[in-house]
Amino acid sequence: MTYHNAVKYVKNAPNLTPKNNAVADRINALSRALGNPQRHIKYVRLAGSNGKTICAQMTTSILNEANISSGCFSMPIHEEIRDNIRINGEPISMDEAVEYISAVREAVAKINSEEDNIFEGHFAPTAHEILLFAAILAFNAHKCSVCIIESDHTGEDPSRALAASPFAALICGIIPSNNKKEISKIRSYISRGMREIVAAPQDEKAFSIIQETCASAGCRPTQANVSGINITRLALGGTDFTYKDNAYSLQVCGKFQTANAIIAIEGANMLKRCGYKIEQEHITRGLANVKAPG
Image (tube, rainbow, N blue to C red):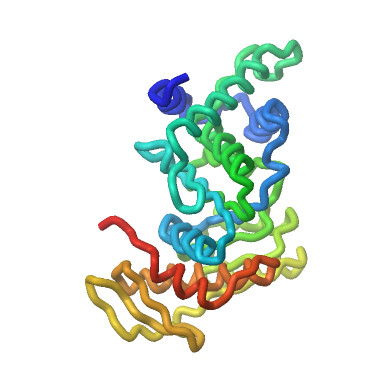
């Protein structure tokens, strides 16, 4: 398989899960055929309505400063599929993309050759399923200490069905209290053994539901405090601000980016509580190094 063929394999794959297939059955089948690689990763769920991409970049940059190896899988699918899978902030190479996507294709062939195949004789993974497992294989190959798996707002988010649960979650943006589907997703993760959850300022009713679920599951909730941001410089060249007695500089402009930054700050503090060696200087330098194409 060449890189061109790997891209075609992903782009020509179905976008939607067949109605007669349960997503959990499909994910479990791929997991078994690949040797259950998801068992060897520790990952953070990145959810919410907006700001996930820049929040992932900020968190990765902080981890880089702390010399903590990281992997990140983003959705939806990008034009350049290597951008969906990043190791320490950089897209995987073309050769790696070929290696991991080929492994998924071989696993699919194995499933379809089994006599007890439950998929009516033919299993065809969706593009999201292919890239999710390619990402997990990449995370294992690079021995990533912490991985970030971004949620997708389509109904075809296969990462929800992974048997391995995230140990924490970052929620970017506001989840309206009437968005029962999104709140249900968050509650399902919390109830599966999540240790901590960091959220952007939420609708009071929505966060109350999250807090109640956390209390019953022994999960620690943290809500970032936007009112604690004090912007000292706002310009096209970047933004300076203080938060909880610490000063920060961003190379990305826009007042709204400070709201994304404090999610990354609280997320870094959460990772520190979970045993990762992250100091304040790593957070400060990590945020200062983030650049977003304009």
